[in-house]
Image 1 (cartoon, rainbow, N blue to C red):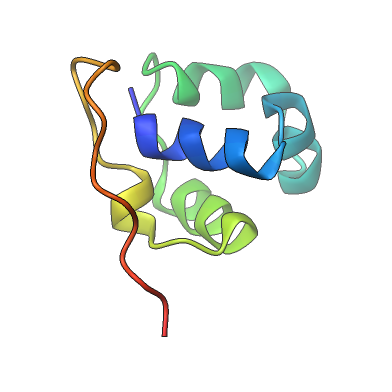
Image 2: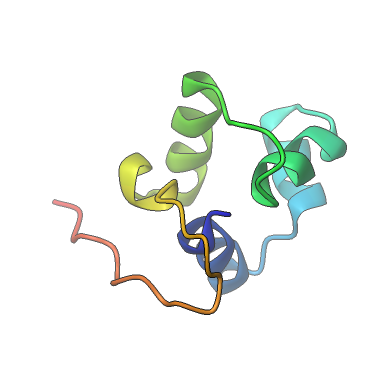
Length: 77
């Protein structure tokens, strides 16, 4: 699970189907990555980080317990 990624999508009002459209990918692929059933490729990580304008490593930090919040993203600059 990638709680930081899910949180950023929520904050921006982006649903996974819209993210899939932006990336030109099948929605089922995006869903499998977001829900932890598939490991994202480096290209996928880079593209998502660019769309969300966030640090790639922070976005894709894993959490076994989705109820555990992770710290806010590092400041870009």
